[in-house]
Image (cartoon, rainbow over all chains, first blue to last red; front, side, top):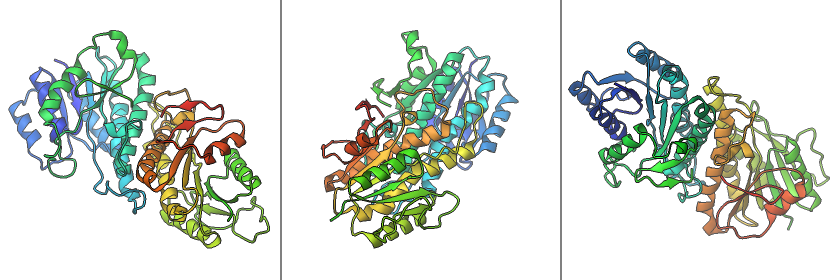
Length: 241
Length: 219
């Protein structure tokens, strides 16, 4: 049985991807930040042998270290990491003529841009013996400058741009060591990032998870494509990132 | 009416060269010197008073919107408008590498690069409603995501400087309808070429990145 670590698994896409992995026979360490949110606990109670909840705040160095220690005490190898956890700013619609909330922008950056690097940094030793060594990052079209059309959303867009740069630099260092990468734009998913489920969005998390997990876990049709880092969306289309 | 430039980051060779080049072209120039630990406003010792009695250079705390706004107030007391804002900040406060991450330093790098650039524009934008309406960001190869080159610059600095490209694009999307244009520039030999590009009247639909050779870079 292969082992995955999924961040931001309490609800939305992270929860759906965890369920999809379990359905495909994976053991999943599902990270939980929202202790009062029931869905992940319900999923884990239905699959006690496949899902283990891991308390994790990816914005905290110590929390990430503790979470990886928790995983290490239970398994000696992690094959797949899905960096999914992210937050959004509640003041995202303020244009440059408005009063920017820099403290909140730093909060978003600390989670969205630096959180994934914290997790990768801590979990790398556990992946050394894996044959798969797959690092996945849920990014966003918001990190794509070439197609950016928004007139605000500084905190979120800048954080996703930084994430894309960070993933690129990780790829440059880790691909020669046998790691493979997936950088993903999931589309406009009905998530809870704004506090309640966004029913204006186009996609249910389960729809996206059903196509994301095969992309995250299976080999590419042409193995040489692993040497080129691309960002793909849920339909398989490539984005300038 | 004199043309007026405000340059954030005249403490390095490129920024000071820009300052002198704009002056040589007859512009009135205000240079802001980053002082992350300070925030005391005043004329820098290296900045000559050019005889006009006006304040020409001020120190700013890159991490403080209040410091930026105070600097903008000082500039607005001396001139009635600003034509061009040039953001030339690159705070190399992080040297993180793979397996040698310093996340505190990486946050600091973002505060003093990506967020500092936004603070500068937010604070000085009200002074630019008349005039050329040009906003420029000095960037570098290490901030380009799509064509990553080997660099000694820390990961945190590179990530944060990449966000400046995003900020420039959002600002352009928002302000273009009001006549603003946004430029990105990678410095190299020949500050004259830099100034030519930063003040030319080509009507770009979106921000683009050029270097002194005329090469256009991706983001």
